[in-house]
Image (cartoon, rainbow, N blue to C red; front, top):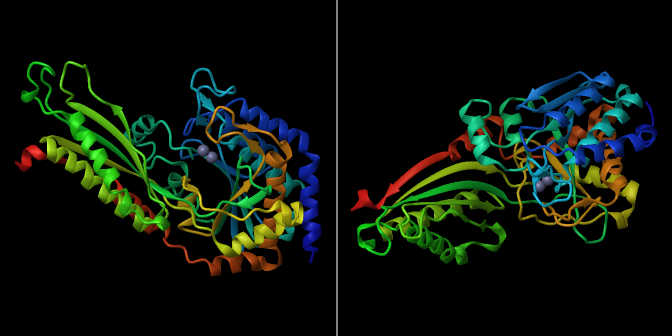
Length: 446
Ligand SMILES: [Zn+2]
Ligand SMILES: [Zn+2]
């Protein structure tokens, strides 16, 4: 039996040997941001490297996803390492694509560099021959929830069902053979420490709202109209009035925007549009808050005698942290960066589709402080190329060795100790159950 520490050192040496190339690759992707379900160039880069390394892989999963598989000497577990292909949209970011506004202001370019560094490390070290499980190497599309109208179009064309990449991968069965998942996200938070895992986080439900009224001359005959903007404002006020009923531990966030407030100032608004997320730290709290939001929106319509159409789209599920898996990762992170380099995970009020993966298997979203500035902001930048592009690949490789060496005993322990809240089937049923279109009219109620 090869010594576990020696196996880890071997993979890390290979990753170090490719340092310059990996950093250049991460920087190249940074300069060529692509939005979700359109990441064709980035996906091609992943595929080219897998080709070069002789890693059998599929492409075009959920439009742009790539999945490679490295077999161990036996297959007692399969652990996936993921990188997200997409960028976010920040038009005034210095690296933004002038045409699309896409910019890597969330550091996903580093994730693809991590993924490819890991491919090199695992293949060229020959370490797989000493492991008792497989490693799936996955480039996942469309983590950022952007360009919703475009994605609804893809859905109408039958190209996707869900609007997020990992939900699509789950739907397509791309994770059916995977027992444990890992990935690393860049963090620009300023606290002490350089590595951790993402703490629990909010999930979200997405709502598109249209208030329908009756147009009339705003000065001459408002009494003949029904003001959809007033109805919308009352709906929003009702949501605000309910905020005191949200419980602290549930971390509910409802943050609507009005995307259309009327047509002309001298016409009573008859078509007013709102979009909102309803976020929460657990599924029950999310559902309860979403129900309150619907009730409030209807109250606005009722007060004005208007109509409201509420389209609900499933977003992502809250992130859960599996202790056993975090423990294995932490041990390896500390071996690399010391106790002082580790920070304690904290709750995150944002949302990620890694939450969906956590609901069906033990999964962690590690965090590395290789970035600076504001996430999704114009000042976001990779400030430490090693922490961004190289270190996460090494910790991932070391963690994989721990999980899959010696009969994959650690992986089996991680799997056995995690009670996934859902199966793939119940997850899909839940997500499909969330999607609905409802019309409520005060005119009919009269
Ligand atoms: Zn982001
Ligand atoms: Zn991100």
